[in-house]
Length: 388
Ligand SMILES: Cc1cc2nc3c(=O)[nH]c(=O)nc-3n(C[C@H](O)[C@H](O)[C@H](O)COP(=O)(O)OP(=O)(O)OC[C@H]3O[C@@H](n4cnc5c(N)ncnc54)[C@H](O)[C@@H]3O)c2cc1C
Image (cartoon, rainbow, N blue to C red; front, side):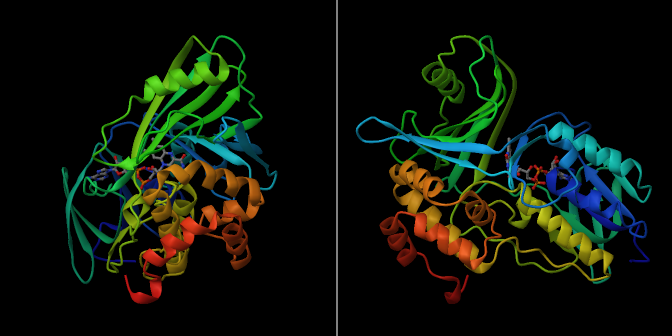
């Protein structure tokens, strides 16, 4: 590709987006690729969950899968209300980060043209018309193209953030049903201005990943997630003793108006930095797979890649309307999500939630939503036609 360069492609970061692109470039022997990662090893630090909507190279890393899931709340009279869905076509998969790492490494090991350099941090970049100089702790590197997955800086304190802590717990008594995941249980203490739910992914009768999630402005003090998990396991499953064997934590920005960068030069943002995270849900796994497919296909075809927009302007606007309705009135969240899962068939809803819904899917989802909060939010949210 580029004669003067040490590498045709340099990828900054061996996280999800960096590795997703690197394993695809492993199929292109003519492209000299370098992946730079400051960490010296890859501990398990997160668990990716996502519906199986498309084929991707990390299928061998799936550790558990559910064809049935539910979303729950309690109504004003104190009665439990649950919406259950089953889909053999789009199961919900779990991928622990260490397993994904192993799959990626075994692919890169068989691709001599792709080099993974651990313990090396990118410090800056200078872009020219014919290439990019990447400054690193170990000296400069010349690249034809740079894909940059370094995490973007946090937003202002007023911005909404999805904050969560998950524990993989082991209980003494068999209390979980591993055939069914709980995607959202709103039957937990609610707080003004906050959307609060728990998430239970059981992998055996005595093991589950349990996550306590808060959607709230960044300035709201951090909740005691561990206490919330303990109380929840007691209240719902009668668990008094359990052992947490793994813990993960995250803070994902979810402000309406987050946009994919428009830059189109030799430095292309990918992953979270490239707008892959869906603001209303915090999901990014599938968007990052679509992004990596598209960018690698462009490179294979000899095209100069441009930033990949993971969702159309209309899908971004709809996400913004949905999120604005939720953030203006967080107390509607339990009713909103339970009605969506109760009134919509799983596959159209899953496609919609992952920004690959057809017009019919979108119409079905709109029909299943409570109308007034959405209409109100739609009037307050400038449509894509009027700029931005
Ligand atoms: C705990 C947690 C759980 C999540 N669970 C889900 C989920 O279930 N489903 C889902 O769809 N999404 C999930 N997400 C959201 C999203 O999928 C992940 O954040 C995903 O890892 C984003 O991929 P990324 O490559 O953009 O960022 P990362 O995976 O964070 O990778 C960024 C990489 O850049 C490296 N880096 C940093 N600085 C430099 C530098 N100066 N030079 C070079 N490299 C650098 C970092 O070390 C890191 O390896 C989760 C996020 C977290 C935090």
